[in-house]
Length: 489
Image (cartoon, rainbow, N blue to C red):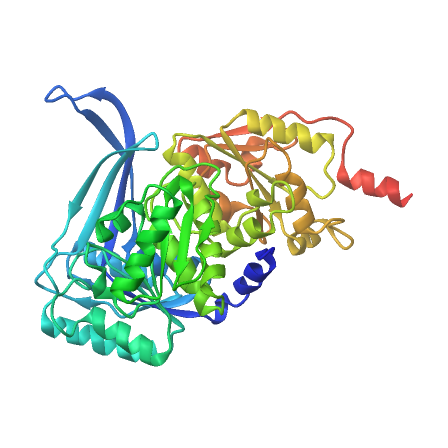
């Protein structure tokens, strides 16, 4: 049975979904740079830092993934009033779709994971953290905040990284309380587990261990399909949970629910670049699917599609709803290159972290002709990855007048995306692409030679950041306006 239409339909219900995220919130920091020598002090590489990026990690990354899908969430966890904690709060408050119900613990520092990266390769990860369990008074405050938020939520995610919020050994804890409260309210509970004692998650609807975590929790072999299913059934029977979704890397996923038939989902990733945060994406998409009315099997299928997308990105990345929609449609060549501005930012960040140069050109591209192809080929030759930005339909009308465009923006984008020399297509509704150029800051900005260099929109911005403007040689005799006029005659 083709479930893609069912999954696509669920995406349209994400706007009405709401998920409660509880767990260990942290700051993920990435230091990007170049290595060109070995330290004289020790046989280690010297990293020349060029860029530092910070983003929500742990349970915060689950909420961030939900926001990218258009799903609203409430985020419950603990940070300290330190520099990292303030950064976490700023990042949460910057997401309109995330309701901040974080608490403060003066007795512990905010967890920070700093990764040092060169050429797309992680050189080192440095962790700053305190893992003692949250105190009784703090847990009671969290419980009160969770109870207040639960009534407005359709599903619950417990993101356990073993940093103290969900790892308490007290009889009544945040963990046990939220599961019991969610069960009483009829809300599904998805757990990203930690440690070896999964009986702590009794009453949860779904656990999402990876293969190693499943082996550690059961002390059973997990070498093939049958062994993984047996280990998952052992967890269900001994820990009192509804089901287990085992993430298996290149071997995909295996879902076992109750005593039903296991479901093996093949890996869908075309290119694995970075698995940082991929587990957060999986639990976020499953929770979103359940909140939108999907059954567990369909939600797992949707999460499997999302996992195939996110591991092709760099850093603690997210999957946007339009990316999922394009992956589910999968009917038009190049459709995956047509991106929203948010998805394009992720794609560009990944290219840059791999040391690739980014080019940019723009136009209406109403009826593609040899002049357009020549421009795009010259632009592609000047960079490693080329972005083509197109005016949306309303912008074309303002620039070209009534009767234009001949093809709508969707058709124009898909034609451009089908070209091998184009790596991404994005639309803009302004009269010029200046805001896009400022956000992306490409290394090469390409326009036709009919422009004077001083008149190229954004050229001064690019050159101020060390980039260059390229004026492409024009193919004579080709014009969309002239073609339309000939057709009219």
